View 1 (tube, rainbow, N blue to C red):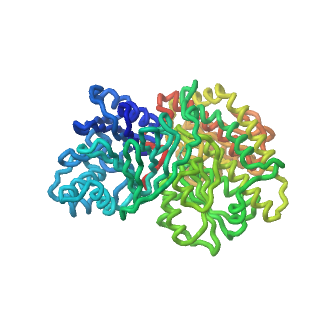
View 2: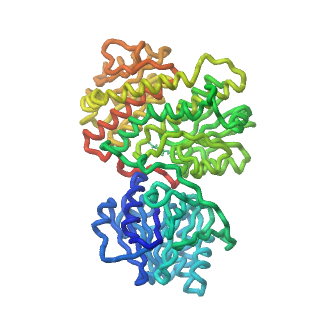
View 3: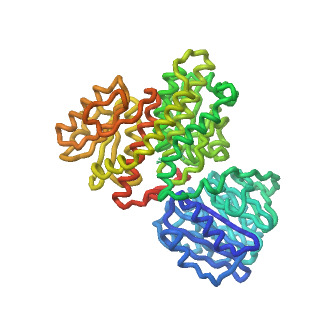
Length: 600
Ligand code: F6R
């Protein structure tokens, strides 16, 4: 979602800001802008569309060594140039970029800005006008900024310029991510370290309800009462090459191909020198206690959670419920006496999941976050973190994080079982090694997947994915991948459920992709395929070696029956990828979607 960058130093700020914004493009956006401050006032440029459009709109004659930039994913007001950030106060003295949602902006408008004519439809503009309101009433800029922050309800990451002071950027955050990067004779601001890795790998974490005054050679953090806070920087471990596409045409394809490597890395990170599973003792302890586990997540991470439930219940014998975060936060189920929460989130910043975390922490319940970003909000605010080690995932459609989530959940389930003294005939390290090899075989069969996509999906309006048991969960993920990047209406169903309504949608030629990797339900799912075939469907069975039948369109290598989701999803990811290509869609940046969903 929205991304923020800022720079104050001695170089020309424009190019540094634009490069930073380009690195934030993956989060999803529909307009972008920058503002620079050079002592002759603040100059801003903004455009609807891509950063490339913004580049065109910039006057290269304007030189400045301080500035802020923004990519906007519209929430309040349509995506157009007027609603794009930066926004300015009435006199144009103050210029602001904002990530988040101000819930009480209507009320603030009525209370403070009755006489101000707002130019945009955004909640953001209220913030910058309020800073000016307090300044006009005699407060210093710093006090005005602080007073404004105290009035805001909701989420924000903010960067503010004052055209009467080219030596400062005012910054603040609440619930939305924001970091300050530290350099030699310069400092930067970024929603995500990736954005400014081009200039520094040293970052300072900011906490909610803190404000920061950033100059060329200092970073002064204060709480909202004005007390100064001292905090050291940390080194961001990201390697800049990890966030480049290299020779790949799209990040999504690169990330699909990285999956065998990620699984091997997880094996390495969660195993000690003697070959035993290696997990934080506190997490081990936490997993021994609960009478029920509640997994909370969104989208693809929710689908990984469904598979995780199978792992934990089958192996560790603890009952598990899996919940969509956005529903859970206002429709909380009756909790058991000793619940443990597991949040699954690639980004660790998803606002829906965080809202649940805040609620359950207030109730005093323990929480583990499984995430790809250990320093993220969900990671910091939970009691414990399990790291996915998947490397940065840039494509909006999640692929390697999904398989990494399931791998880590399998390790957690087995470790819990062993600690409880449950004897298992399942060695996760061995099974995951087999998975990694199978993934490699599948990644080498791209042309076959391209052919399936061309044959079944190049022109279709819709597509169904069916499976039974654990295959049903993979079908849900296959459908999500396909719809989000190819815009084909796709749904996943439990095979046996079709005849209770959905089969009415099957027409001559409707593609139905069936996943058949489970011995117990192999006959059942094949029966469902016959039902849809009898009604004209164009069915495509993806089965597993050992369970295949004549006519199956694709057969994946054999893996342990619990591990099949990590492997059967690869053809579905690739089919979605090629379907999107055949339909000329923007694979890495699908319309309307954001990578890091930081609003509820
Ligand atoms: C789909 C996708 C989304 C995310 C969801 C949760 O490909 O990426 O459905 O899975 O927005 O995001 P995280 O995992 O960052 O909490």
